[in-house]
Length: 141
Image (spheres, rainbow, N blue to C red):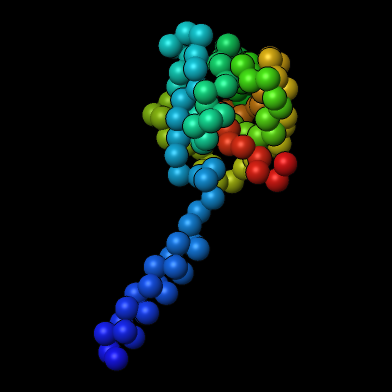
């Protein structure tokens, strides 16, 4: 009888833990295809399927007169369908440390099949020297 209770307890524990898994859009990072390998560090895609269909065409950044970094990432979809996604600019200082981690909300957008899309943002702080854009599918669509 005790053995049966232990077995049932272990099985219910496994089922509970399986139900608490995180969504498939978190926890994995993969690079998208890039036209030039120098562009590879600018985009992180949190979905393997989406990463196969996104191409980084260019990444640009300029320091504005007020000292803030203005960044633009141009991506292209190789897919025939539309993808709803969320993106977030991550700002890094001269040492590569993230500025204000976890303090910015993700933006929503849709990229249509074959479309070239430019994502733009301005850094919140003059100490930002470079950027990364994180993209994940918007599972609400």
